[in-house]
Length: 212
Ligand code: URA
Image (cartoon, helix red, strand yellow):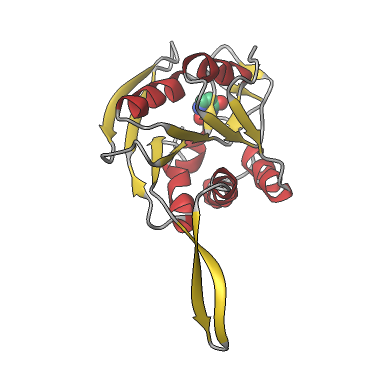
């Protein structure tokens, strides 16, 4: 279905998979679901920023000078509303200086086609590392719509962080944005007729916010 022309980074850390198992469990209540969403997002964001440039520095410990490295460069985090908001605080905890954009996409329940209802992006994205956060890469419709908007705004280095991906979503991103990078711990079986990921974890936004 996809040829891996697009870079898919399969994150294999045991703590990531521990949190994912709890997120998948239908018995997990919203409070724990939110905590696990934060935990897994922190770990995935650490993986997606592994190659951020760093500058050598010397700092003074109480006992003398020590060589170190400080992260350099502009990072922009873009949650895709609503579900992506559940991942935002975790990424900002890791990179407090990051600028934040928002993209609001509504998925039509019948057709699963994404339409835009909100967009506010920081300026000058050309040299930024853009972390697009959207937990469920299902049909890929929302991801591609958001990637279109980011590209149009000038972004070149876009890394999509998702918690569960479907082969269909990866294939669409690959067809439309082969230079994007995808970070995910799980590529599931596929989609059901309602375009939910199987086995997936259900509706991420509903489980995060307790709406049904
Ligand atoms: N969005 C969700 O929240 N879950 C899915 O399975 C697919 C899209």
